[in-house]
Image 1 (cartoon, rainbow, N blue to C red):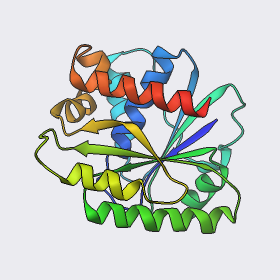
Image 2 (cartoon, rainbow, N blue to C red):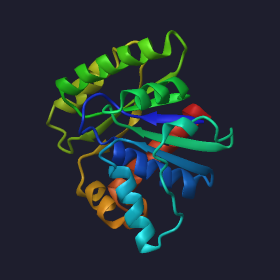
Image 3 (tube, helix red, strand yellow):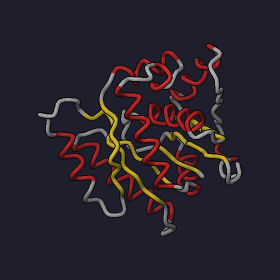
Length: 209
């Protein structure tokens, strides 16, 4: 099972999602997890390297070469963090994905980027179906701000894209988790961020299993 996490626009939080979801699956679902970090910025790899240096378990060491993607076996859950700088790696990952999770920040620019990404996926897949999920990430915590609701409405209108009910909000816990090498639910088990990742993991795994 290969889940690709990405979008055309930078800064959508795909590395945050990859890091936390990988550890959630490994610890809460007790499944074998393999991570591919195909983003030249290597943010996901850096976070896992800090985790290894601190001696935290489970240890996950991201793969950096796309060639082996798809040979892991049906009992391994694979999470792929892609970066658009390597076009060949991106195309191979999109071709081999079973589902694609698209983090989207609540802005018009991110919605436009998501539309272009969906078109790119369709061109690469050449009519081969794939499950497409959108995740509102870095949503505003203030209910009076309309951008999050407006982005959700716009995403809900995109054909073939399933907007998840779960949302991740703009919280410092996500930034801190990278520097400490811990998922938010390990670092602060009773935090709002921990509850958000748990809800995301449960919803996503329910939909793809």
